[in-house]
Image 1 (cartoon, rainbow, N blue to C red):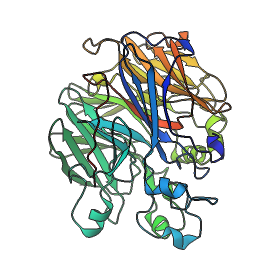
Image 2: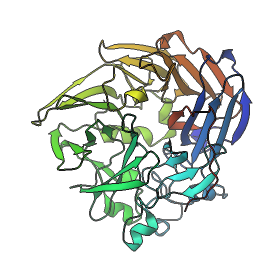
Image 3: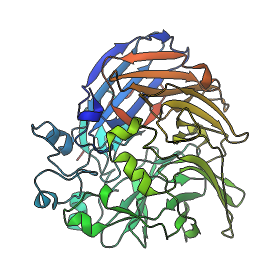
Image 4: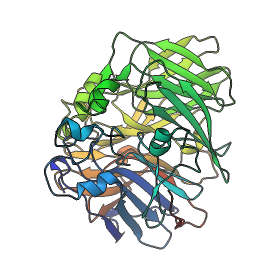
Length: 482
């Protein structure tokens, strides 16, 4: 399955055994991941969502399952013919401008991330409602409006629903899941949502935006939501005219600042602090330090270089084509004073932290990196960054390989230390194969403690979630959603 030339990963349901090492004792739970299982254009994001689950259970083989989300885009991809037959985020449908005038501006591919909350598994894509899946079988149950929280007033809004981002933030102390959605219409706005364990999801507030900013991720402290509104602005007229798709209509305005938007979780006025322009996809984490708000993110020089990188699948493994993102830390005081510095020179993307430390101070950031500190960034290495000492612990698979974001799994969920594992997918593009790899989180450079080959590729995945259910097995849902 050659992802670089329009191939399609086949769905898989199999028991697996390690080819190297052994599954660590005590590792029990399910890793869910989502990404592009096929490619309908050369644009790196134009792939239908292939959700996979990898279940570790004591005394049993590792079990893998993958299924495509049955979106309209996926069903259309089964039709014969060159080029996309529906409008995608990075590519127009074949057939000319008139084929690309209908709403929504792009068909959901539900391919960016997954979130399991209250036994509800959601495939997420920031331009649409979530798609609900059965957590056990991965069967598609349908689009989900989170108990009407994503169904605002108005006939068009009711038909399309309100977008729900692919990056919700979890507060383990409050047992709350927060998220947002960007509405890019005539009056652009940011919608804020909260889901609480065992209760209905709710729409909390709407914030008018001065521009149609591309907002992919946010961070959360115990008191605030943090958004970085970089000067990447959607040219809405170009999109609705059918001329170009949404991602090609994102414009970089280098003469404008990045605006840091701080929204109190308890309600009340928000604050805006201006900074030099930068582009970023992802935050690592955030916390309150007294009255200061501190957050870490991966910063890139501009959207222009990033867009060039993701505009072709061939760029993913070519270091000369990929821009370098590096880990930065920002601090905003109660008076609005802004301080920032680069934490480390080593390239980084897909940053993660121990999820138990969400909304609190963290020391280690995990991510995908490259083998060198200079040049472009082919994401071939699993890395741990020590933000206090500026040290990096890294294992590089080398050219022709891609690793996913590594997720931290604690050895003992009840002990808040750094003992645990990093779990990731490692893709050999030449061999068109996927391995599930497990690292000791405190000795990454020693290499994986366990490598588990998968009989079929699991695609080019973006984000995932580790779930440790009380009984060690994933729950099941059978009720369909609207």
